[in-house]
Image 1 (cartoon, rainbow, N blue to C red):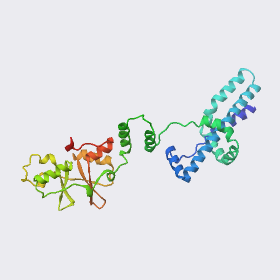
Image 2 (cartoon, helix red, strand yellow):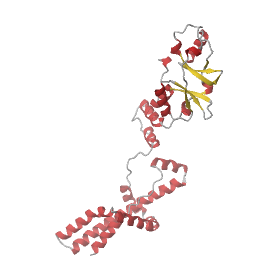
Image 3 (cartoon, helix red, strand yellow):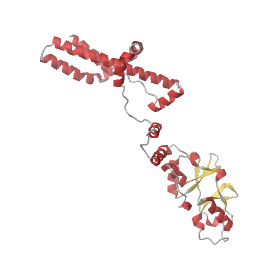
Image 4 (cartoon, one colour):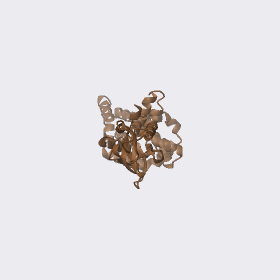
Length: 306
């Protein structure tokens, strides 16, 4: 009954999974390896050792299967031996996946790991052909960063415009208002008491903008938004900004993500928002066009430019 002992050994060997706990994705591990991070180095070494261990297991399993078949046929000549050998080999992976054998296999793996690592070190060159055959990587993308790296290395697979749009979509959810706002020092605003005379209108048109924050006393007190469309029919010099501006003013926090800001623009039917910091101080503005530009990867013409 030597073949029965060989079969039990085969079950135990097949139950050895050599599955380490993976902390990093492939992309992240390679990135950290370049930085010399110790955790990534240890994980990479363990993964390599596991591949060699699996290679060694495959060799031993192959040899053991040959011995198993030989011993079965030796002890049970004829058709009976062939049936026993066939059933034994077919049932091998099924039995090895049963929980008791998997638990036992994990125990054996923990107890013998250091010994196996010492054993495979001198025979790594011999194991290399099996290592290559069983370690063929499965194509898998684990993060947006990995997909971004793949896209950027596509070598002409996509046009520049398509690449720009895809990259914009991939990074959109991670962007915040801080990343795209027009800072306070660059904001073109107008006082609510300003008379809409020729000089004021001329200056507004020259900016190339179609919407302007309207302030009371200073820019920290924005009370409305002036749209050039609303002053097209205004008689020059007979109206002040306050009479033509729109209320209320949409206010967003500097660390809001762009997805939520886009939803607010749509919900409130607004095109321009005042951006405040955590102390509620005005630090800039953001427009619907700015958000769309990040979403599709290209600038959107302001209404005035259409």
